[in-house]
Length: 436
Image (tube, rainbow, N blue to C red; front, side, top):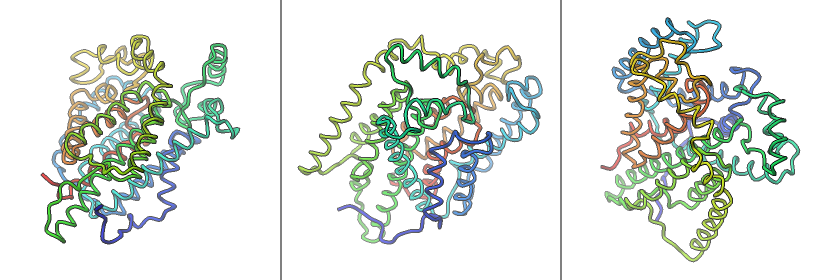
């Protein structure tokens, strides 16, 4: 028998419009008039409203202050010696530093938040992640049908020139189209994010948010039943038994594979590994009926078809990693940095990567050295501790690192939104009495 809450709890007192508006902002995270007059800024404002509405408090304040102080100290040294390392287009480096520090404080504080009613927050993010995954999958399907003029692969790629983090021109895009047409290839499928890898990491973040939220909600329900009946039914603590949840995760996984991003290959492996580990630890206990078995068989056949259709692409990318420009731009600087950069940050402008910081982890190290490493280590440590309690450490840490490694500045509103999808549900574990 499935355990359900005995009462319905208000989801942060917010209306359905607020929740749907937040989802809409996630879908258009890269769209806006300017960098701050954009949906990412609106999404951040909504997120802060939702957090404040639930009356949060902070734990581990002394640790947060210590790591932030170390981060600021080394950041100030880098900003004084090589301001271009902090920002290449800043008109006022002092204001930029304030912004960087502010975002860093927000990110490191999130996994240390204690909410008065964590269940409300979990319901909120479970709803947001579920609906976002369904809408993204629907948009991918409609886009490939090409029945709506402004929702085709070509038109969506062309709108990249209007995105707030645009790094291309219309002339370059038209040249790419000519090349693709001449070689019988299709345009990329990136919806409104500008690149396939960004779409992939959004899907990955939503899947992770969904699994963490539901695992913790089921824990709450189990604790409530134990208080009522005095029984310890550990076998009921499941993450994949809910039919709707399983279908949503499947849709997200299939979408991630179908868009054919090199990043999505690794994200899909992590999700599959999470299923395997859950089964190994007894958290995947699906009671099969003939109907369920038929549905599962159909879903696996469809997923197999998606994987088979993309097999050539992923095989080529895996066997030609050395020729991947995106891979080189994101990770080559790891070997370019010397001991000094890892210790105090960049002190010579020649050490700034040729294509800028395409990897948020390298950016944090580049601007703050050991201060950035300690800041990131504390963030990952807190995330690991919270995720370990629900046996989703691999999934949570991989998703956080995936968001950090995605192109674009990590200390920015859009990355905070993606990180919040993972970190806020995790922070709810601070108040929940979890099983040993």
